[in-house]
Amino acid sequence: MLQQLGMMLFYEREKMGETQKNIAEGIISNSELSRVESGELEIDYFMLQALFERLGKSIDKLELAVSGSEYDAIAYRIEIERSIENWDSVLLRELLRKYPSYNDEKRPVHRQYMIMLYAIGWYVSDHDYVSCLHWMEIALMTTLGEEWQQNARNRQRLCNQEIKIMLVIAYCRWKLGDTDGLSENLEQLGRYILRHYTDTEERVKVYPHCTWLLGQLYLEQNRVEDAYAICRKGRESLIENGSLSPLWEILELEESCLQRLGKEMELAQCRKYQEAIAFLYQVTGKHLESNMMAAFMKNSFQGELVITNELVRDLREAKGLSQEELCEGICAQETLSKIETCKRSPNKKNLYRLLKKMGMERENYYGFIEADKYELYEKVREYNRCFPKARDEEAKKLLNEIEQGIDMTKLVNRQFIGMERIFEQTTQNSITREHANKQLREILYLTMPLMESDKMIYRVPFRTEYMIWNKIAINLRRQDKVEEAIHIYEEIMKCYKRSKVVMRFHAVPGMSLYINYTGFLETHNELEKAVEIGKEGLQHSLECCRGDLSGDMLANLSLVYGKQGLPAIEESYLRHGYYLICLYGRENVTDKLQEAYYQKFHKLINYTDHE
Image (cartoon, rainbow, N blue to C red; front, side, top):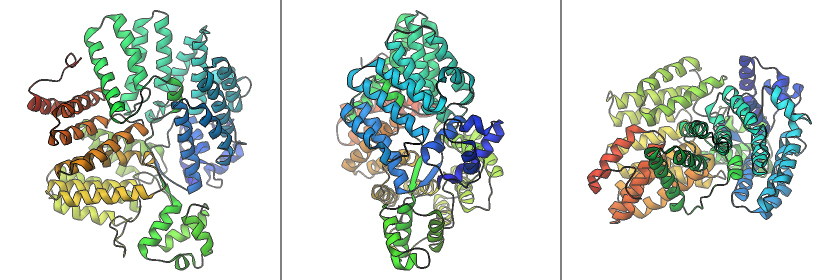
Protein backbone atom coordinates (compact mmCIF):
# COMPACT_ATOMS: atom_id res chain seq x y z
CA MET A 1 0.00 0.00 0.00
CA LEU A 2 2.91 2.35 0.64
CA GLN A 3 3.72 2.82 -3.04
CA GLN A 4 0.55 4.93 -3.33
CA LEU A 5 2.49 7.76 -1.69
CA GLY A 6 4.91 7.84 -4.63
CA MET A 7 2.91 10.43 -6.55
CA MET A 8 2.81 12.68 -3.51
CA LEU A 9 6.58 12.33 -3.22
CA PHE A 10 6.93 13.28 -6.89
CA TYR A 11 4.78 16.41 -6.54
CA GLU A 12 6.68 17.55 -3.45
CA ARG A 13 10.09 16.98 -5.02
CA GLU A 14 9.11 18.80 -8.21
CA LYS A 15 7.65 21.70 -6.25
CA MET A 16 10.96 22.08 -4.41
CA GLY A 17 12.94 21.86 -7.62
CA GLU A 18 14.95 18.89 -6.32
CA THR A 19 16.58 16.35 -8.61
CA GLN A 20 15.95 12.64 -8.22
CA LYS A 21 19.68 12.13 -7.63
CA ASN A 22 19.76 14.47 -4.65
CA ILE A 23 16.84 12.69 -2.98
CA ALA A 24 17.66 9.09 -3.90
CA GLU A 25 21.45 9.01 -3.54
CA GLY A 26 22.52 6.48 -0.93
CA ILE A 27 18.96 5.16 -0.48
CA ILE A 28 17.82 3.81 -3.86
CA SER A 29 18.84 4.28 -7.50
CA ASN A 30 17.43 7.07 -9.65
CA SER A 31 15.61 4.53 -11.79
CA GLU A 32 14.02 2.96 -8.71
CA LEU A 33 12.88 6.37 -7.49
CA SER A 34 11.26 6.99 -10.89
CA ARG A 35 9.32 3.75 -10.53
CA VAL A 36 8.34 4.61 -6.93
CA GLU A 37 7.04 8.02 -8.02
CA SER A 38 5.02 6.49 -10.84
CA GLY A 39 3.55 3.81 -8.55
CA GLU A 40 5.27 0.93 -10.34
CA LEU A 41 7.61 -0.04 -7.48
CA GLU A 42 6.65 -0.74 -3.88
CA ILE A 43 9.30 -0.02 -1.25
CA ASP A 44 9.14 -0.56 2.49
CA TYR A 45 8.02 1.96 5.09
CA PHE A 46 11.50 2.96 6.24
CA MET A 47 12.86 3.64 2.76
CA LEU A 48 9.78 5.68 1.90
CA GLN A 49 10.12 7.51 5.20
CA ALA A 50 13.78 8.36 4.42
CA LEU A 51 12.85 9.76 1.00
CA PHE A 52 10.20 12.03 2.50
CA GLU A 53 12.65 13.10 5.20
CA ARG A 54 15.17 14.09 2.53
CA LEU A 55 12.47 16.59 1.55
CA GLY A 56 12.06 17.64 5.19
CA LYS A 57 8.60 16.06 5.45
CA SER A 58 7.00 13.56 7.81
CA ILE A 59 4.71 10.69 6.88
CA ASP A 60 3.52 10.48 10.49
CA LYS A 61 0.56 12.73 9.76
CA LEU A 62 -0.73 10.20 7.23
CA GLU A 63 -2.87 7.24 8.22
CA LEU A 64 -1.23 4.29 6.48
CA ALA A 65 -2.57 0.86 5.63
CA VAL A 66 0.17 -1.74 5.92
CA SER A 67 0.30 -5.52 5.83
CA GLY A 68 0.85 -7.57 8.97
CA SER A 69 4.47 -8.22 8.05
CA GLU A 70 5.11 -4.54 7.38
CA TYR A 71 3.63 -3.71 10.76
CA ASP A 72 5.89 -6.28 12.46
CA ALA A 73 8.93 -4.57 10.91
CA ILE A 74 7.79 -1.16 12.16
CA ALA A 75 6.92 -2.41 15.66
CA TYR A 76 10.26 -4.23 15.92
CA ARG A 77 12.09 -0.93 16.11
CA ILE A 78 10.04 0.03 19.16
CA GLU A 79 11.48 -2.96 21.00
CA ILE A 80 14.95 -1.80 19.99
CA GLU A 81 14.24 1.68 21.37
CA ARG A 82 13.14 0.16 24.69
CA SER A 83 16.30 -1.94 25.01
CA ILE A 84 18.42 1.21 24.64
CA GLU A 85 16.21 3.16 27.05
CA ASN A 86 16.54 0.36 29.63
CA TRP A 87 20.32 -0.02 29.14
CA ASP A 88 19.78 -3.66 28.16
CA SER A 89 22.78 -4.50 25.98
CA VAL A 90 21.98 -8.26 25.95
CA LEU A 91 18.49 -7.67 24.53
CA LEU A 92 19.84 -5.06 22.10
CA ARG A 93 22.35 -7.56 20.67
CA GLU A 94 19.63 -10.21 20.33
CA LEU A 95 17.27 -7.79 18.58
CA LEU A 96 20.06 -6.69 16.26
CA ARG A 97 20.81 -10.32 15.38
CA LYS A 98 17.19 -10.92 14.34
CA TYR A 99 16.73 -7.60 12.52
CA PRO A 100 17.45 -9.01 9.01
CA SER A 101 14.46 -11.32 9.31
CA TYR A 102 12.23 -8.23 9.45
CA ASN A 103 13.96 -5.94 6.97
CA ASP A 104 16.18 -6.26 3.90
CA GLU A 105 19.70 -5.69 5.24
CA LYS A 106 20.99 -5.28 1.68
CA ARG A 107 19.19 -1.96 1.43
CA PRO A 108 21.45 0.94 2.58
CA VAL A 109 18.87 2.42 4.97
CA HIS A 110 18.59 -0.87 6.87
CA ARG A 111 22.29 -1.65 6.71
CA GLN A 112 23.00 1.79 8.13
CA TYR A 113 20.47 1.26 10.92
CA MET A 114 22.07 -2.06 11.89
CA ILE A 115 25.56 -0.54 12.05
CA MET A 116 24.14 2.35 14.08
CA LEU A 117 22.68 -0.14 16.56
CA TYR A 118 25.99 -1.98 16.74
CA ALA A 119 27.65 1.35 17.54
CA ILE A 120 25.10 2.16 20.25
CA GLY A 121 25.68 -1.31 21.72
CA TRP A 122 29.23 -0.23 22.65
CA TYR A 123 27.81 2.73 24.53
CA VAL A 124 25.01 0.81 26.25
CA SER A 125 27.25 -2.03 27.45
CA ASP A 126 30.48 -0.18 28.35
CA HIS A 127 30.01 3.56 27.75
CA ASP A 128 32.70 3.07 25.13
CA TYR A 129 32.54 6.39 23.28
CA VAL A 130 35.56 5.63 21.09
CA SER A 131 34.05 2.47 19.59
CA CYS A 132 30.61 4.06 19.34
CA LEU A 133 32.09 7.01 17.44
CA HIS A 134 34.09 4.74 15.12
CA TRP A 135 31.08 2.62 14.12
CA MET A 136 28.78 5.61 13.79
CA GLU A 137 31.15 7.05 11.20
CA ILE A 138 31.08 3.74 9.33
CA ALA A 139 27.26 3.80 9.49
CA LEU A 140 27.19 7.26 7.95
CA MET A 141 29.38 6.12 5.07
CA THR A 142 26.64 3.66 4.09
CA THR A 143 24.53 6.41 2.56
CA LEU A 144 26.91 9.37 2.29
CA GLY A 145 30.11 7.62 1.18
CA GLU A 146 33.63 7.65 2.60
CA GLU A 147 33.87 11.41 2.22
CA TRP A 148 30.76 11.80 4.36
CA GLN A 149 31.99 14.92 6.16
CA GLN A 150 32.51 16.79 2.90
CA ASN A 151 29.35 15.36 1.37
CA ALA A 152 27.33 16.32 4.44
CA ARG A 153 28.57 19.89 4.13
CA ASN A 154 27.87 20.07 0.41
CA ARG A 155 24.73 18.02 -0.08
CA GLN A 156 21.37 19.72 0.32
CA ARG A 157 19.37 16.80 1.65
CA LEU A 158 19.73 14.46 4.64
CA CYS A 159 17.22 12.05 6.16
CA ASN A 160 16.39 11.88 9.85
CA GLN A 161 18.54 8.78 10.42
CA GLU A 162 21.61 10.46 8.94
CA ILE A 163 21.13 13.54 11.12
CA LYS A 164 20.75 11.38 14.23
CA ILE A 165 24.02 9.63 13.47
CA MET A 166 25.75 12.99 13.08
CA LEU A 167 24.34 14.06 16.45
CA VAL A 168 25.58 10.87 18.13
CA ILE A 169 29.03 11.41 16.58
CA ALA A 170 29.04 14.97 17.96
CA TYR A 171 27.85 13.68 21.36
CA CYS A 172 30.68 11.12 21.51
CA ARG A 173 33.23 13.75 20.50
CA TRP A 174 31.97 16.03 23.27
CA LYS A 175 32.21 13.25 25.84
CA LEU A 176 35.76 12.48 24.69
CA GLY A 177 36.78 16.14 24.97
CA ASP A 178 37.30 16.52 21.23
CA THR A 179 35.40 19.79 20.80
CA ASP A 180 37.59 21.58 18.25
CA GLY A 181 35.20 23.03 15.65
CA LEU A 182 32.29 21.08 17.13
CA SER A 183 30.16 24.14 17.93
CA GLU A 184 30.50 25.36 14.34
CA ASN A 185 29.52 21.92 12.99
CA LEU A 186 26.40 21.82 15.16
CA GLU A 187 25.49 25.39 14.28
CA GLN A 188 25.67 24.44 10.61
CA LEU A 189 23.59 21.31 11.20
CA GLY A 190 21.01 23.34 13.12
CA ARG A 191 20.73 25.84 10.26
CA TYR A 192 20.30 22.95 7.83
CA ILE A 193 17.44 21.48 9.89
CA LEU A 194 15.65 24.82 10.20
CA ARG A 195 16.02 25.53 6.51
CA HIS A 196 15.16 22.17 4.99
CA TYR A 197 12.93 20.47 7.57
CA THR A 198 9.96 22.72 6.86
CA ASP A 199 7.58 20.18 8.40
CA THR A 200 7.77 20.96 12.12
CA GLU A 201 6.51 17.46 12.93
CA GLU A 202 9.68 16.05 11.39
CA ARG A 203 11.94 18.85 12.61
CA VAL A 204 11.11 18.15 16.25
CA LYS A 205 12.67 14.70 15.95
CA VAL A 206 16.17 16.14 15.57
CA TYR A 207 16.27 19.91 16.16
CA PRO A 208 15.80 19.95 19.98
CA HIS A 209 18.54 17.33 20.29
CA CYS A 210 20.88 19.53 18.26
CA THR A 211 20.07 22.59 20.40
CA TRP A 212 20.65 20.63 23.61
CA LEU A 213 24.11 19.53 22.53
CA LEU A 214 25.01 22.97 21.23
CA GLY A 215 23.76 24.51 24.48
CA GLN A 216 26.02 22.20 26.49
CA LEU A 217 29.02 23.32 24.44
CA TYR A 218 28.11 26.99 24.84
CA LEU A 219 27.79 26.52 28.58
CA GLU A 220 31.25 24.97 28.79
CA GLN A 221 32.58 27.95 26.83
CA ASN A 222 30.90 30.25 29.38
CA ARG A 223 28.57 31.57 26.66
CA VAL A 224 25.64 31.36 29.06
CA GLU A 225 23.30 33.75 27.22
CA ASP A 226 23.89 31.85 23.96
CA ALA A 227 23.30 28.54 25.75
CA TYR A 228 20.02 29.80 27.20
CA ALA A 229 18.86 31.24 23.86
CA ILE A 230 19.51 28.03 21.90
CA CYS A 231 17.98 25.97 24.70
CA ARG A 232 14.78 28.01 24.44
CA LYS A 233 14.64 27.39 20.69
CA GLY A 234 14.77 23.66 21.32
CA ARG A 235 12.05 23.92 23.92
CA GLU A 236 9.85 25.98 21.58
CA SER A 237 10.14 23.26 18.92
CA LEU A 238 9.04 20.63 21.45
CA ILE A 239 6.16 22.71 22.78
CA GLU A 240 4.91 23.60 19.30
CA ASN A 241 4.58 19.91 18.44
CA GLY A 242 3.40 18.67 21.83
CA SER A 243 6.51 16.49 22.13
CA LEU A 244 7.96 15.10 25.33
CA SER A 245 11.44 13.93 24.34
CA PRO A 246 14.04 15.33 25.10
CA LEU A 247 12.08 17.91 27.13
CA TRP A 248 13.47 16.71 30.46
CA GLU A 249 17.06 17.15 29.27
CA ILE A 250 16.25 20.56 27.75
CA LEU A 251 14.75 21.75 31.04
CA GLU A 252 17.80 20.51 32.97
CA LEU A 253 20.01 22.57 30.68
CA GLU A 254 17.69 25.55 31.01
CA GLU A 255 17.87 25.26 34.80
CA SER A 256 21.69 25.40 34.69
CA CYS A 257 21.57 28.48 32.46
CA LEU A 258 19.03 30.27 34.65
CA GLN A 259 21.05 29.58 37.80
CA ARG A 260 24.13 31.14 36.25
CA LEU A 261 22.15 34.07 34.87
CA GLY A 262 20.48 34.69 38.23
CA LYS A 263 16.95 34.69 36.79
CA GLU A 264 15.06 33.60 39.90
CA MET A 265 11.46 33.83 38.63
CA GLU A 266 12.21 31.92 35.44
CA LEU A 267 14.18 29.38 37.46
CA ALA A 268 11.23 28.76 39.80
CA GLN A 269 8.98 28.27 36.78
CA CYS A 270 11.44 25.88 35.13
CA ARG A 271 11.61 23.77 38.28
CA LYS A 272 7.83 23.52 38.45
CA TYR A 273 7.81 22.22 34.90
CA GLN A 274 10.45 19.68 35.86
CA GLU A 275 8.36 18.59 38.84
CA ALA A 276 5.32 18.12 36.60
CA ILE A 277 7.23 15.91 34.14
CA ALA A 278 8.78 13.92 36.99
CA PHE A 279 5.29 13.46 38.46
CA LEU A 280 3.98 12.21 35.11
CA TYR A 281 6.66 9.52 35.01
CA GLN A 282 6.20 8.69 38.69
CA VAL A 283 2.44 8.01 38.48
CA THR A 284 2.96 5.76 35.46
CA GLY A 285 5.69 3.78 37.22
CA LYS A 286 8.34 4.87 34.72
CA HIS A 287 11.93 5.65 35.64
CA LEU A 288 13.05 9.14 34.60
CA GLU A 289 16.68 9.92 33.94
CA SER A 290 18.71 11.86 31.41
CA ASN A 291 19.64 9.49 28.60
CA MET A 292 20.39 11.42 25.43
CA MET A 293 21.46 8.31 23.54
CA ALA A 294 17.95 6.92 24.03
CA ALA A 295 16.51 10.34 23.19
CA PHE A 296 18.42 10.39 19.90
CA MET A 297 16.67 7.13 18.99
CA LYS A 298 13.20 7.79 20.39
CA ASN A 299 10.78 10.08 18.56
CA SER A 300 7.37 11.53 19.16
CA PHE A 301 4.94 9.64 16.96
CA GLN A 302 1.68 11.12 15.73
CA GLY A 303 0.77 8.70 12.98
CA GLU A 304 -1.66 5.84 12.67
CA LEU A 305 -1.44 2.39 11.13
CA VAL A 306 -4.19 0.07 9.89
CA ILE A 307 -3.36 -3.55 9.05
CA THR A 308 -4.95 -4.58 5.76
CA ASN A 309 -5.06 -8.25 6.81
CA GLU A 310 -7.26 -7.37 9.78
CA LEU A 311 -9.39 -5.00 7.71
CA VAL A 312 -10.33 -7.88 5.38
CA ARG A 313 -11.14 -10.18 8.31
CA ASP A 314 -13.22 -7.63 10.23
CA LEU A 315 -15.25 -6.61 7.17
CA ARG A 316 -15.92 -10.23 6.20
CA GLU A 317 -17.11 -11.15 9.69
CA ALA A 318 -19.29 -8.02 9.92
CA LYS A 319 -20.94 -8.88 6.60
CA GLY A 320 -21.52 -12.46 7.71
CA LEU A 321 -19.57 -13.95 4.81
CA SER A 322 -17.64 -17.19 5.03
CA GLN A 323 -14.07 -17.30 3.75
CA GLU A 324 -15.24 -19.51 0.90
CA GLU A 325 -17.91 -16.99 -0.16
CA LEU A 326 -15.51 -14.04 -0.08
CA CYS A 327 -12.56 -15.59 -1.88
CA GLU A 328 -14.59 -17.21 -4.68
CA GLY A 329 -13.20 -16.07 -8.03
CA ILE A 330 -10.39 -14.10 -6.33
CA CYS A 331 -8.03 -16.43 -4.47
CA ALA A 332 -7.86 -19.79 -2.72
CA GLN A 333 -9.57 -20.17 0.65
CA GLU A 334 -6.24 -21.22 2.15
CA THR A 335 -4.69 -17.97 0.89
CA LEU A 336 -7.46 -15.87 2.44
CA SER A 337 -7.06 -17.74 5.73
CA LYS A 338 -3.35 -16.93 5.81
CA ILE A 339 -4.07 -13.29 4.96
CA GLU A 340 -6.58 -12.91 7.79
CA THR A 341 -4.19 -14.42 10.34
CA CYS A 342 -1.33 -12.15 9.15
CA LYS A 343 0.69 -15.15 7.95
CA ARG A 344 0.73 -13.80 4.41
CA SER A 345 0.74 -10.29 2.96
CA PRO A 346 -2.19 -9.65 0.62
CA ASN A 347 -1.48 -9.18 -3.07
CA LYS A 348 -2.43 -5.59 -3.96
CA LYS A 349 -4.72 -6.54 -6.82
CA ASN A 350 -6.47 -9.26 -4.84
CA LEU A 351 -6.76 -7.00 -1.80
CA TYR A 352 -8.66 -4.40 -3.80
CA ARG A 353 -10.90 -7.09 -5.27
CA LEU A 354 -11.67 -8.49 -1.81
CA LEU A 355 -12.48 -5.06 -0.40
CA LYS A 356 -14.58 -4.09 -3.43
CA LYS A 357 -16.59 -7.31 -3.10
CA MET A 358 -17.44 -6.20 0.44
CA GLY A 359 -18.44 -2.70 -0.66
CA MET A 360 -15.25 -0.81 0.14
CA GLU A 361 -13.75 0.83 -2.92
CA ARG A 362 -11.26 3.01 -1.10
CA GLU A 363 -7.75 2.31 -2.42
CA ASN A 364 -5.92 5.00 -0.48
CA TYR A 365 -5.72 5.03 3.30
CA TYR A 366 -4.56 8.49 4.24
CA GLY A 367 -5.41 10.37 7.40
CA PHE A 368 -8.56 12.50 7.32
CA ILE A 369 -8.52 13.26 3.57
CA GLU A 370 -7.29 11.93 0.23
CA ALA A 371 -5.09 14.31 -1.74
CA ASP A 372 -2.04 14.18 -3.97
CA LYS A 373 -0.50 17.30 -2.45
CA TYR A 374 1.31 17.00 0.86
CA GLU A 375 0.62 20.63 1.75
CA LEU A 376 -3.07 19.80 2.23
CA TYR A 377 -2.20 17.28 4.95
CA GLU A 378 -0.09 19.98 6.58
CA LYS A 379 -3.11 22.28 6.53
CA VAL A 380 -5.29 19.60 8.10
CA ARG A 381 -2.78 19.22 10.90
CA GLU A 382 -2.63 23.00 11.44
CA TYR A 383 -6.42 23.08 11.42
CA ASN A 384 -6.64 20.48 14.17
CA ARG A 385 -3.96 22.25 16.21
CA CYS A 386 -6.07 25.41 16.30
CA PHE A 387 -8.66 24.04 18.72
CA PRO A 388 -6.55 23.34 21.83
CA LYS A 389 -5.42 26.99 21.66
CA ALA A 390 -8.83 28.43 20.76
CA ARG A 391 -7.71 29.86 17.39
CA ASP A 392 -11.21 29.70 15.89
CA GLU A 393 -10.83 32.27 13.10
CA GLU A 394 -7.65 30.63 11.84
CA ALA A 395 -9.45 27.26 11.89
CA LYS A 396 -12.29 28.61 9.70
CA LYS A 397 -9.82 30.00 7.17
CA LEU A 398 -7.87 26.74 7.00
CA LEU A 399 -10.99 24.61 6.60
CA ASN A 400 -12.09 26.74 3.64
CA GLU A 401 -8.66 26.34 2.04
CA ILE A 402 -8.72 22.57 2.58
CA GLU A 403 -12.18 22.26 1.02
CA GLN A 404 -11.08 24.27 -2.01
CA GLY A 405 -7.94 22.15 -2.45
CA ILE A 406 -9.40 18.62 -2.32
CA ASP A 407 -11.58 16.55 -4.64
CA MET A 408 -15.00 16.67 -3.03
CA THR A 409 -16.29 13.79 -5.16
CA LYS A 410 -14.25 11.42 -2.97
CA LEU A 411 -16.24 10.01 -0.08
CA VAL A 412 -13.56 10.49 2.58
CA ASN A 413 -13.12 14.15 1.63
CA ARG A 414 -16.87 14.78 1.76
CA GLN A 415 -16.91 12.97 5.09
CA PHE A 416 -14.14 15.08 6.64
CA ILE A 417 -15.49 18.43 5.45
CA GLY A 418 -19.06 17.43 6.30
CA MET A 419 -18.03 16.47 9.83
CA GLU A 420 -16.30 19.78 10.42
CA ARG A 421 -19.20 21.82 9.00
CA ILE A 422 -21.59 20.03 11.35
CA PHE A 423 -19.18 20.79 14.21
CA GLU A 424 -19.20 24.48 13.24
CA GLN A 425 -23.00 24.58 13.23
CA THR A 426 -23.15 22.82 16.59
CA THR A 427 -20.73 25.21 18.31
CA GLN A 428 -22.69 28.16 16.88
CA ASN A 429 -25.94 26.60 18.19
CA SER A 430 -27.34 26.61 14.63
CA ILE A 431 -28.51 23.01 15.06
CA THR A 432 -29.36 20.89 18.08
CA ARG A 433 -26.96 18.22 19.24
CA GLU A 434 -29.59 15.59 18.49
CA HIS A 435 -29.84 16.81 14.88
CA ALA A 436 -26.05 17.05 14.67
CA ASN A 437 -25.71 13.41 15.68
CA LYS A 438 -28.23 12.36 13.05
CA GLN A 439 -26.16 14.14 10.39
CA LEU A 440 -22.88 12.78 11.78
CA ARG A 441 -24.18 9.22 11.55
CA GLU A 442 -25.24 9.79 7.95
CA ILE A 443 -21.75 10.88 6.89
CA LEU A 444 -20.20 8.10 9.00
CA TYR A 445 -22.17 5.54 6.98
CA LEU A 446 -20.46 6.78 3.78
CA THR A 447 -17.45 4.63 4.70
CA MET A 448 -18.67 2.61 7.69
CA PRO A 449 -22.19 1.46 6.74
CA LEU A 450 -24.39 -0.48 9.11
CA MET A 451 -23.90 -4.24 8.95
CA GLU A 452 -25.92 -7.31 9.78
CA SER A 453 -23.52 -7.84 12.66
CA ASP A 454 -24.69 -6.84 16.14
CA LYS A 455 -21.45 -4.90 16.63
CA MET A 456 -21.93 -1.14 16.51
CA ILE A 457 -18.25 -0.63 15.62
CA TYR A 458 -17.08 -3.73 13.78
CA ARG A 459 -13.58 -2.70 12.68
CA VAL A 460 -10.85 -0.27 13.71
CA PRO A 461 -12.17 3.14 12.62
CA PHE A 462 -10.15 5.26 10.24
CA ARG A 463 -9.19 8.67 11.57
CA THR A 464 -12.21 10.63 10.37
CA GLU A 465 -14.52 7.81 11.41
CA TYR A 466 -13.05 7.91 14.91
CA MET A 467 -13.47 11.69 15.04
CA ILE A 468 -17.13 11.34 14.05
CA TRP A 469 -17.76 8.75 16.78
CA ASN A 470 -15.98 11.03 19.25
CA LYS A 471 -18.17 14.00 18.33
CA ILE A 472 -21.28 11.83 18.59
CA ALA A 473 -20.21 10.74 22.08
CA ILE A 474 -19.55 14.34 23.16
CA ASN A 475 -22.97 15.42 21.91
CA LEU A 476 -24.59 12.55 23.81
CA ARG A 477 -22.77 13.64 26.95
CA ARG A 478 -24.10 17.19 26.52
CA GLN A 479 -27.58 15.68 26.25
CA ASP A 480 -26.99 13.87 29.58
CA LYS A 481 -26.89 10.51 27.77
CA VAL A 482 -23.61 9.56 29.42
CA GLU A 483 -24.16 5.80 29.33
CA GLU A 484 -24.62 5.86 25.56
CA ALA A 485 -21.45 7.95 25.17
CA ILE A 486 -19.44 5.59 27.37
CA HIS A 487 -20.70 2.62 25.33
CA ILE A 488 -19.23 4.18 22.16
CA TYR A 489 -15.81 4.51 23.79
CA GLU A 490 -16.02 0.95 25.12
CA GLU A 491 -16.70 -0.37 21.62
CA ILE A 492 -13.89 1.66 20.06
CA MET A 493 -11.47 0.48 22.74
CA LYS A 494 -12.46 -3.14 22.09
CA CYS A 495 -11.62 -2.69 18.41
CA TYR A 496 -8.22 -1.21 19.21
CA LYS A 497 -7.44 -3.92 21.75
CA ARG A 498 -8.50 -6.68 19.35
CA SER A 499 -6.13 -5.36 16.69
CA LYS A 500 -2.53 -6.46 16.40
CA VAL A 501 -1.64 -2.77 16.21
CA VAL A 502 -0.66 -1.41 19.64
CA MET A 503 -2.15 1.87 20.85
CA ARG A 504 1.09 3.74 20.17
CA PHE A 505 0.23 3.44 16.48
CA HIS A 506 -3.20 4.98 17.10
CA ALA A 507 -1.46 8.06 18.47
CA VAL A 508 -3.83 10.85 17.51
CA PRO A 509 -7.24 9.27 18.29
CA GLY A 510 -5.78 7.56 21.36
CA MET A 511 -5.12 10.85 23.14
CA SER A 512 -8.68 12.18 22.89
CA LEU A 513 -10.14 8.71 23.50
CA TYR A 514 -8.39 8.34 26.85
CA ILE A 515 -9.18 11.91 27.94
CA ASN A 516 -12.89 11.76 27.11
CA TYR A 517 -13.43 8.16 28.19
CA THR A 518 -11.91 8.91 31.61
CA GLY A 519 -13.93 12.11 31.96
CA PHE A 520 -17.23 10.45 31.07
CA LEU A 521 -16.57 7.55 33.45
CA GLU A 522 -15.92 10.06 36.23
CA THR A 523 -19.19 11.87 35.42
CA HIS A 524 -21.00 8.53 35.61
CA ASN A 525 -19.26 7.75 38.93
CA GLU A 526 -17.50 4.66 37.55
CA LEU A 527 -14.45 5.76 39.50
CA GLU A 528 -12.29 2.62 39.56
CA LYS A 529 -12.70 2.21 35.80
CA ALA A 530 -11.93 5.89 35.33
CA VAL A 531 -8.62 5.50 37.20
CA GLU A 532 -7.75 2.44 35.10
CA ILE A 533 -8.44 4.20 31.79
CA GLY A 534 -6.81 7.44 32.93
CA LYS A 535 -3.59 5.69 33.95
CA GLU A 536 -3.59 3.79 30.68
CA GLY A 537 -3.93 7.13 28.89
CA LEU A 538 -0.90 8.52 30.69
CA GLN A 539 1.07 5.45 29.62
CA HIS A 540 -0.11 6.10 26.06
CA SER A 541 1.15 9.68 26.14
CA LEU A 542 4.61 8.48 27.25
CA GLU A 543 4.67 5.77 24.58
CA CYS A 544 3.94 8.37 21.90
CA CYS A 545 6.31 10.91 23.53
CA ARG A 546 3.39 13.34 23.72
CA GLY A 547 3.16 15.69 26.67
CA ASP A 548 0.71 18.30 25.43
CA LEU A 549 -2.45 16.50 26.54
CA SER A 550 -0.99 14.74 29.57
CA GLY A 551 -2.04 17.69 31.70
CA ASP A 552 -5.66 17.16 30.69
CA MET A 553 -5.40 13.52 31.72
CA LEU A 554 -3.94 14.47 35.12
CA ALA A 555 -6.71 17.06 35.62
CA ASN A 556 -9.37 14.45 34.79
CA LEU A 557 -7.90 12.03 37.29
CA SER A 558 -7.83 14.74 39.95
CA LEU A 559 -11.64 14.88 39.74
CA VAL A 560 -11.82 11.12 40.19
CA TYR A 561 -9.59 11.19 43.27
CA GLY A 562 -11.66 14.08 44.65
CA LYS A 563 -14.79 11.96 44.40
CA GLN A 564 -12.94 9.07 46.06
CA GLY A 565 -12.26 11.31 49.08
CA LEU A 566 -8.50 11.59 48.49
CA PRO A 567 -7.86 15.36 48.66
CA ALA A 568 -4.05 15.19 48.84
CA ILE A 569 -3.86 13.09 45.67
CA GLU A 570 -6.53 15.25 44.02
CA GLU A 571 -4.51 18.40 44.75
CA SER A 572 -1.25 16.90 43.46
CA TYR A 573 -2.78 15.69 40.18
CA LEU A 574 -4.54 19.01 39.53
CA ARG A 575 -1.46 21.10 40.32
CA HIS A 576 0.91 19.09 38.15
CA GLY A 577 -1.69 18.92 35.38
CA TYR A 578 -1.90 22.71 35.52
CA TYR A 579 1.88 23.10 35.17
CA LEU A 580 2.00 20.72 32.19
CA ILE A 581 -0.76 22.64 30.44
CA CYS A 582 1.09 25.90 31.21
CA LEU A 583 4.29 24.44 29.78
CA TYR A 584 2.56 23.69 26.47
CA GLY A 585 1.17 27.22 26.26
CA ARG A 586 -2.56 26.56 26.48
CA GLU A 587 -3.66 29.72 28.28
CA ASN A 588 -7.33 29.14 27.48
CA VAL A 589 -7.26 26.02 29.71
CA THR A 590 -4.90 27.24 32.46
CA ASP A 591 -7.32 29.99 33.53
CA LYS A 592 -10.07 27.41 34.08
CA LEU A 593 -7.76 25.12 36.05
CA GLN A 594 -6.48 28.02 38.15
CA GLU A 595 -10.05 28.93 39.05
CA ALA A 596 -10.97 25.29 39.80
CA TYR A 597 -7.91 24.95 42.04
CA TYR A 598 -8.78 28.13 43.94
CA GLN A 599 -12.40 27.09 44.44
CA LYS A 600 -11.34 23.69 45.76
CA PHE A 601 -8.26 24.54 47.83
CA HIS A 602 -8.75 28.27 48.51
CA LYS A 603 -5.34 29.34 47.24
CA LEU A 604 -3.67 30.13 43.95
CA ILE A 605 -1.22 27.91 42.12
CA ASN A 606 2.09 29.70 41.71
CA TYR A 607 5.75 28.95 41.17
CA THR A 608 6.96 29.37 44.76
CA ASP A 609 4.57 27.17 46.77
CA HIS A 610 4.89 23.42 47.32
CA GLU A 611 8.69 23.34 47.28
